[in-house]
Each structure stands twice: as structure tokens, then as C-alpha cells.
Length: 194
Image 1: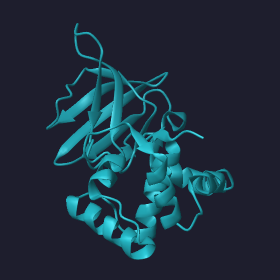
Image 2: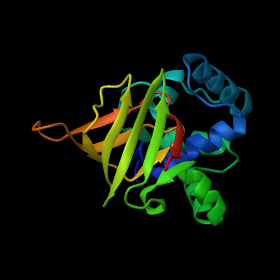
Image 3: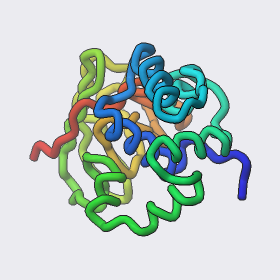
Image 4: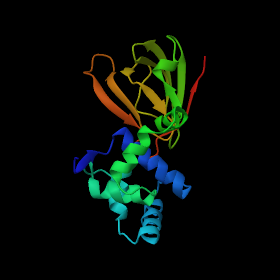
């Protein structure tokens, strides 16, 4: 088994969501990470630094990988013997749980050409994107954001509580670039507005 794993892997996203569900709060602020480290200490008498948790949640920049020891500790916090047992439990989950693990939001499989998606994120950002098919969108409205009306981009989904990753963002004759919106708190709302 690998000693490290990419922290953007879906299994790790699910682990984060399961931990937030377990402690009944979103882990978003420096205080939340201190709180979580404290709860883990109380339950397991194992130390995990708030900084390690912040890296795993993507709150601060750091390695793109998570150590196996960290993943095992967090799996134990959820009542599993180790990371492998947690991974095995994911395979046994029902479809409804795997849908929850995907996150609430909109996937391109749910869209038809011409559908318009409205998304909002902190502090007061808003965008409306028209679906062109093939994971391609055109920006129709953009408020308080670096995105511009007429820009185009590719993405597969818009998930509440997750950052919005835009690939091949093109503005006029500029070369394509990548863009992340809501990197700290994720999207606040996502809806189709036809």
C-alpha cells in the first residue's frame, strides 16, 4: 500500500465529509481545526496538529499528498481499525450514500445544451454559466469576480461546499488558463435557472 495519497482523491474528500458529519460541524475556520484536533485527542489520545488538518482540508497550501499515518488516525477516529478498512467500507456503501459522497450540486450529466447554471460563493460572488455541451460553458453573468462575461471554460460539476475548478478558461485571444473559485469555503449555492 502507498505510504502517501493525493489529498484530492475522492476517498479523502469522503473522509473529510464523514469527519464533519461525525463532529456535526463544517471544518472551515482556524478555530474549527483546533476544535477537531482537540476532539481527536479526547477520543484517541493521539496528537494531530491543526496544521496537518488544515493541509488535508485544503485550508492552507502544502503538500498535495496525505500521509498514511494521518489517514489511519482519521479512520480510527471514525471507528475503523485503519485506512484500508475505511476504504473497504466505501466500496460497500449504497448508491444513495455514494451520491451524498459526490456532494450536493449539479453534474454535466444532469444538463441539456442551453441550460443556465447560477452559482454563488463568498464573499459576494455570483456567476451564471450557459451549458454548450461537452463539459463546455459560456459565462453570461459575473458579479464581483475576476471572471468576465463571454469567457468560456470546461468543468464537469458544480458542488456545494467544494471549490469550483474551471479548466481551459479562455478570454478573448488570451491563452487558456485554469481557475479556482471558492478555494477556501467552496460554493454556497448551485441551481439551474432556465
